[in-house]
Image (cartoon, rainbow, N blue to C red; front, top):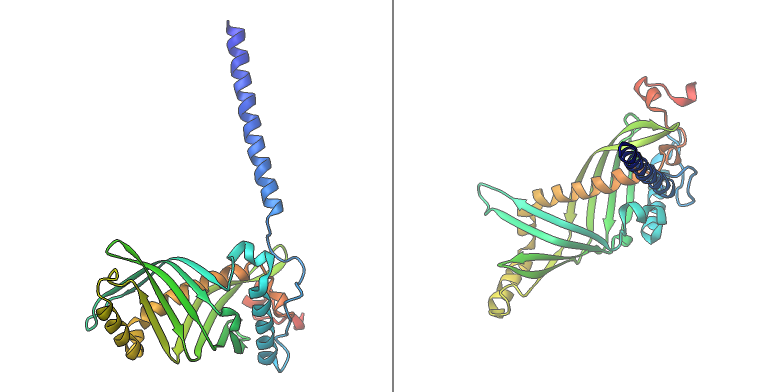
Length: 279
């Protein structure tokens, strides 16, 4: 009897070890098949140098080329950040509290952003002292569609810019080392958004019961869109900052920094203020 119990315990222990080994093996296989980062410079990246006089011109052209190719479709990027045009976002909340303005809370279960492929990079200025970026972009057109809840009903909100959207973005970074490569670690993103003209459309605002009131409210919003946007500017900027931070942070972990800047120092050289060209 004792021998049978011993064999039963031994079998259970062996079975447990096999299960653990199988689980570890599956994790290793999954890890080996997943994309980590670019070990070689991809063709859609144009390299520049910190030492070149026309660095801003070079980095501007390089970023425009990269955005165009990434939005067109790079499998390694799609696996990590998904599609960029259209860009699909989940559970977005715009909240604005103010002493003078009415408190506003808009929760979107889904927000779809279209026409990002039309973005034009006007300038991408690299700061040589701390490797931050000052980016200026122009969007000739931008369309947003969102679903939100009101009194238990799912409603549709559509926004469309009818004139240029200008965005100035400050991107702060640190450098860190991994596997002998230097990477950007995005630490802060700050956007300044300027819209030429915005048109809104709310569908089924009152459940179809009062079309005249619905149209009156919509007309008021569209005629005074700039005032409404200024009220929501702080919360809108916060949401855009978070979205762009998440995207840039993920992208920078996929691409070693030297593919962007061939002569970028290592983190150690950067902290010691040593140029790689002087070594």
